[in-house]
Image 1 (tube, one colour):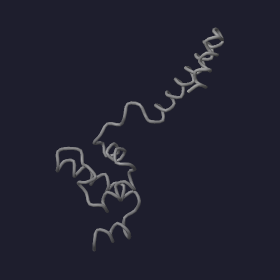
Image 2: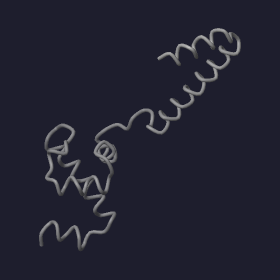
Image 3: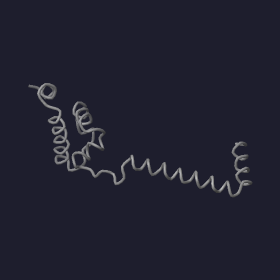
Image 4: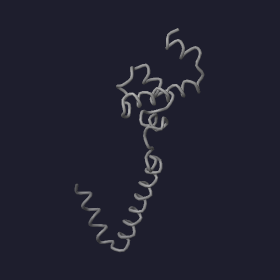
Amino acid sequence: MTEKAFFGDVMEKQDKKAYALVLLKDKYSELGRLPKRSDFDGETVCLIKQKLGPWPRALEAAGLKEPPAVSAKEKSRMKREKSRRNRKKNRQLSALNPDNALSEKNQEEKK
């Protein structure tokens, strides 16, 4: 039985995920470095990405790579809060000094 037929017919979803993890770990021990997509054939890369997500997340799931200290979602939230604080600060400054705010507005319109 070919590997492709084995994947499609017999393996359960959890088995395929476990198999993808094993593939990554085995390649890591074989190469002595983090495996790249180019270290696998196209079909295997598709299986790994299908079951474990994007390549960096797949390496994290296999325990080969540390996850980022701050998640992308948290990073985005922090960026929005910083932007909100800056807008509030700018509004307060323009309320204290309306002449400056008007001149800044005029400069923007001239551009």
